Image (cartoon, rainbow, N blue to C red; front, side, top):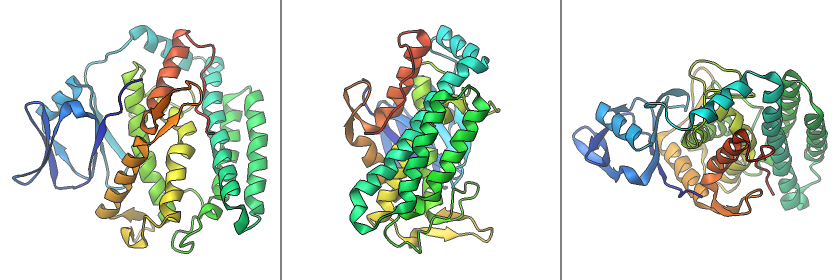
Length: 343
């Protein structure tokens, strides 16, 4: 298993990225705020209006360091890529399957099965850990419904129907998500999933963390030689990392949703770190984004035993492990793609 390297998150809109030999520099005005060797990085994620020199971009491409740009709220803007590399036979197999509705369905079912299974696990874990605080009937009903959706997913024969099953499961899951918030319930009230813009504080946290996860999934897929833009579940769209979004589905509950709940319920985030815009959207302050990024990085350093590989790995390597398993299946080394299933 590969080594987990660092991801550099740049949140200051005044920052400029430059190259000095084999080092990445973060400059604000004439002052060097950070100097880090490029071999210590696997990715750079910029938020706001950060600029970067062509020399720095070239260095990132040469060293296979992902460099992406996002708005302050986390909306994806652009990603720097170099010459296409990796296994051309693997990518051709990926493209052929993406063009086949029947073959794509099998991959899509794996992603959605993993997502629903892990959403159910989040609810089950909450019931196990907090049963003494109430009966939580709505959450129990949610667990039952997600169990039914899992059975329907296994027997699904059409990708359109599959998307419908996923949509129903997501509505049920997010419909009880507010019950999982135990601290400062009024300030952190969750009123259903909202994206562009997020309309409450929990949605702002979820959207921001999903952006970080999307970057990690794209980088992992590129590392194993797959094309992040050609997916099996999400439809292709120019600039859209469809396969990365596919891979994210099963990882959202474990990597993002649980961290979001932990941040709120352990009082690691405060209402002062959020700002409501006139449009109704909610954004985070620079200081709050730094808190979230630090928590994300700490979470990625924790270790688990991968449920399929049986190896102890850093949580931050889960996207890479799943991308590797996906590539193995496409090459014919595995009979099926094993989604990541929480324990």
